[in-house]
Image 1 (cartoon, rainbow, N blue to C red):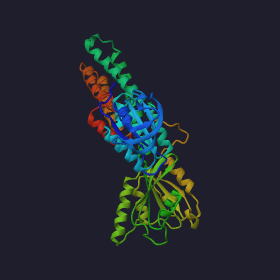
Image 2: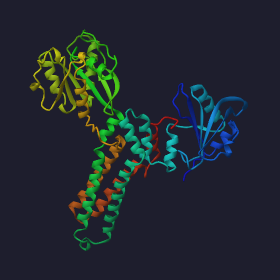
Image 3: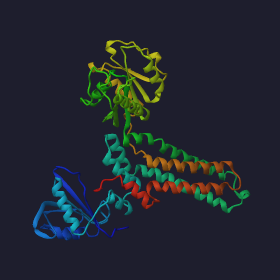
Image 4: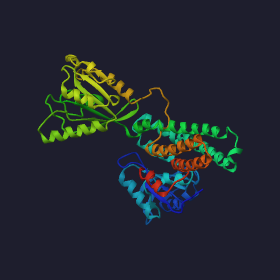
Length: 458
């Protein structure tokens, strides 16, 4: 077990007014620092692990000046978040009190923690693997219940178990292949290489199954970009306000009211969405509106889902027809708004396989049909249990390892005297890549990249 030789400190709670603020201290001098600052019936040095004490905190250079009334929580190594000695100081909420306490702790000998350094120590001390450490950041940043549940599953080790099983199976196959190198080709039983190939195909399938979870992971972590597009005055801003349940975008009968993209966040069936209202697309001379239309088109090109709105009371014109042909049917939902005023759009003219629904938003009609269509396009499984899903980092590494593993499999299936040697070399590459997912293999640069996403107090 690695215990660090310096002591770090940081405020672990968000800034601003609150009932409680927490300052966290971790390292070999945590209890000694608390001893110099804390005044209570119980001395920090005498506190057992997992205990707490009430008292007052004062600056190290002025024992008479009380900084705050506090609760001191003591955690003895290795039974703490970092597996180092840890002291947590619970004070009254508010930025001033917390900053005064942190300053006193630093002046007493601690060092200011870097972003994610507490969790980095937990990883280096063996309390968490790298996947679990990343789950901490995902849980903090979760914007929906479904995202939080997936992060909790990952923190519990479900994703680690999947990766470890793949790693262990791959290393076992690699060892068995290398064992064949001790035999001449004619001495190997005929079924040896086919049997190894079958086991390697199972590993390939397991990697592909993990890769299949990336799209869901992307939606849960980053949110789906949903862009509302269409000509002026078809109801784009009305739709945005209806989905948000508040008046966010200005709605008027004047064409060109929205001249820039407006972005807001909401959750649909557990999936966070980045909802973007765009400028109405039309031919104009106004420089400002032209720029808004350019931005609208750029948003549409990068969207996970386009909600393209049409005025159902007007026949489909050439501009809308051209725009519909430009959109990907698999990523588009057409909303035929103002259907209460008539239905003059021939749905047979819509591109094949392009979903559509009708609405009369000013009368509050059609919103549920649209949210159902959104959930279907997001491939949301309403009754599916929460499960851990891979991130962008994991996907890139698994994709690379999969390529090496498929190369190893191809070598085995092609046969030949060099097949075991070439196959084992490819599998070594795959194993090294997979090891960086869970942290079996890591570099300082990798840890810097992972933990730079964290807040300082975590």
